[in-house]
Image (cartoon, rainbow, N blue to C red; front, side, top):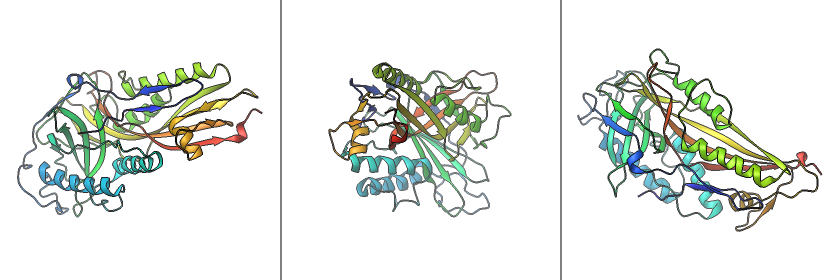
Length: 347
């Protein structure tokens, strides 16, 4: 069962706690997966480069990944499981373990490997991609989306990315013999996976985008956080957002309707600038503890306080003319850095 740790706090002169990607099971996207041909055959994961035995049994792969995750959570490190965990999943776990050590947070989110529905690319090219909609072990309802990747025929499938399903009015159907698609592919889909993640980085910072996205809980919460902080500052400073798509993937698979499911990794910054001489802007909770090293402390912003977060996001990209890009899954943002540039002090 995944521990619910879906909120972060940024306390100024008034308290501010904002929920991230809360979900209701009956609102989650519905995956419909037809198992690709050959995936029910027991195969060795270290398949040859000639493309034989391209599909792997979900139970075999997920068992290996599950054991690796147990080791990582026990050791609070991914160092000994790199044969099974990589990409954004490694970054997410490393950040989560580091924050647990820094903040004393025992409520770590788990990654479900209970296979509800999965599909495996039939491509002979690498990296090979698999997407797994996992189930909540207690309810049996779809809970998370895992993206797996095999970089070459001599390596196992690794957990590449994981995100929690969020409300989205879309059914995801992967057809028999579905395939991974290149990040620049845009012949039949509304936008290429690469452009989708690039444009979403712009959306994270509140900028205009060439790609039209449906409203999603991640950016809705982020914008609300920005506006709340701005109001709290009362003219003593300002707030800015910045977003970046990281150089991991994106990894994508075609859907039966001619669309695609894509997962990418992002960083975003929340920056507070103190602009009025003699003013005091005080933060608490994780930001203060990061700066002071002490629990239950507060910290007075000197100049420009920047907090950086990591998040993994999955999108449904419809076929051309099929509507807007939708967010179907997002991980809980993980705090990765906090800095205060005193050179920007107005005093």
